[in-house]
Length: 452
Image (cartoon, rainbow, N blue to C red; front, side, top):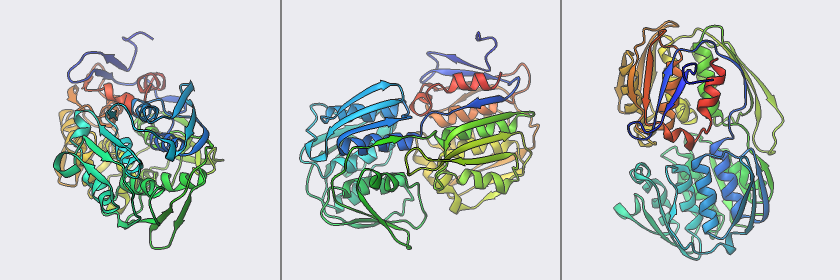
C-alpha cells in the first residue's frame, strides 16, 4: 500500500519527534492481536531478573520502554537474550547476585520502569544512578522516594530526591505500612518490590484499588503476598525462582481499536488474546454506562495462571454522554485520552473528573487533549482534575489541520483514531509521534490494515 492509499502516513523529521498525517477511513474491519501488555512486560522482566535461575517471557512487548528495562538489568549483571522480538530468555543470579552498574541506568520515557526500579534497587548492596529523558526528568518521583526513605532507603537527587536523576546507595530496609493516597499502582508496586528484600512485612493500603499485576505475579515467582478485606496488600521478604510466563495483549492498546470500531459506521473488529484484568477494564464499565451494546467479551484460559484474557468483538454503536463516576477513573486512567475521543461522538456531554493524575503523565494529558480536541472543532472545557467534552453525536462536524501531541504516545494514537472520521479530503497532521513506539510498536501498520 503506498502512502496515497494509507489512512495514516508517517512523516519523519517533523516538529518535536516525527509526525503523522491522518485521513478518513474507507472501512474498519478485521481481526488483530495487539502487542503484549506493557505493564505486565515490565514486571515480568523485573521479577524474572530478581529471581534466581532461568525465566522465559513470551508475548513480551518489544517497545522502547520495555527494552530499556532489559538493558538496565544487563548492566546489573543479568543475562537476557531475545530469541525473537516477543520471546525473552533470562538467566539471573537472583537479587543477591546483582552487581553495581558501571554506567548510569537510563529509562528513557518510562515512568513505570524508573519508579519500580527505584524500589528494586533501594535494598541492594551497591550504588546506582537512575535517569530518563527530559520529559521523565520533569515527572514527580517523591511519591515513590518519600515512602522508600521511610523504609530506610538512601536516595539523593534534585528537590531532595523528588525528581530525576536519582542516586541510590543501597541500604537495609524495614517493612512499613503505607496508605496509597496517590492511587498509583506504580507507588504500590515499587514498595512491594522493595519489600521483597526488606526486614519484616511491607503493606500497602489502597482506599481505591489500583492495577494488581505486581501482587498477582510475585506469588507466581514463588514470593508470598497476603491480602485482607480492608484493601491492604502485604508482601513478605523472600527469594524468587525463575519461571516461564506469558504476557497477554495490552488492554490499553486494544482500547484505541475499540473506539475506532465504535465511531465508524459498518465497522467490525475482533481483538484476540486481550488481557482482561478487572483492575484494568473500568473502560468497559464506562462504555456500558454510555449505552454501548456492541462490545462482546469472551474470556479464555490464562497463559500465565494469573491474568485473565479473552476475545473482544466490537462494532459501530450510538451512545450517550455521561458524568463518569470518579471512583472508576483510577482503573481507566490510561484509556482517558481514547475515551475523550469517543465522547466527541456521544449524544450529550461527557464529564471526566477525579483524573488529576493525568497532569503528570508523559504530558499533561488533560491540557493536551483539550488543546487537540479544540483544534479540530470540538467544544471542550478544562478542569484542574479533568475535562468536559460536548459530544455532537455520530456525525460530528470536524476540521483538519495540525495538532501537537506533546510527544505523548496516547495523545498521538487517540487523535489518529479521531482522524478516521474526518470529512472526505480533509487531513490532520499530528506532531510528536515517535514516542508511539514506547508502548505500541507497529501501531501505524495495524491502523492502516484495519482501516482499509
